[in-house]
Length: 81
Image (cartoon, rainbow, N blue to C red):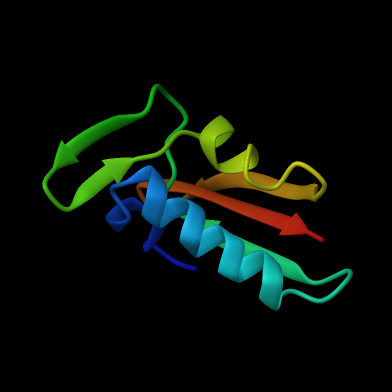
């Protein structure tokens, strides 16, 4: 999921998105996303919210963090189920 999560601006929709992703991933499957922020979470525009790293990780508590790294103007996260 490249540069998508920042366009999900409500907690309800973020929960819905991540619940669907978790239901689709098989055991040992990988989930890669970008668009999260290292600093505090903030809503920048009507259609952009910078979710922070911990807010994303809170949705994937039983997943292994494989990689966290800079990517373009954001960050990249790779998780394994």
